[in-house]
Image (cartoon, rainbow, N blue to C red; front, side, top):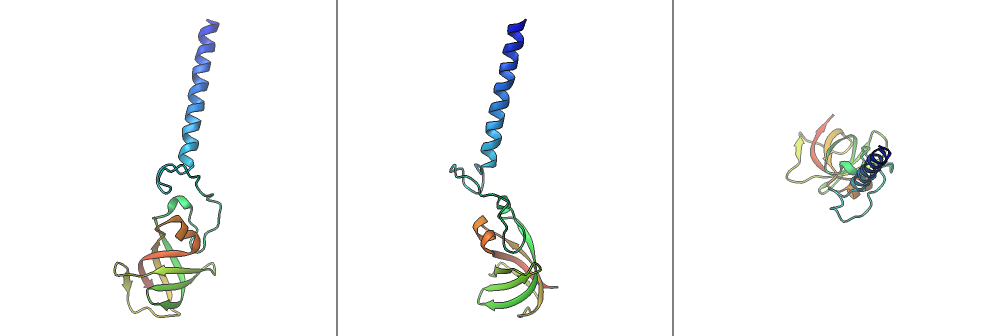
Length: 131
């Protein structure tokens, strides 16, 4: 009877250790952004310019609100509500609502294509409209 209990506890501990190892591996970015290369994911505690975004949300649409400071060809530079500058790449796929000019208050839906873009304040604008 003691052997059966000891054996059962040993099996349970083994399963717990294996499950913990798989959970740690999943949190290290093994699926998705790092491409499964085994590179360790960056800490989500790092502050990102513009909208607050965790590295795991790269590619998701975020809202950027603020004053349009300037337009440099296909890049709109916005001072967001937190006071940081955010660069929005505008291309043929961006839906621009109305005639937007410098110093307008705008609301944009933007995507950080890569987590590095989110952390450096560079975003692709999905849509832009006056607030």
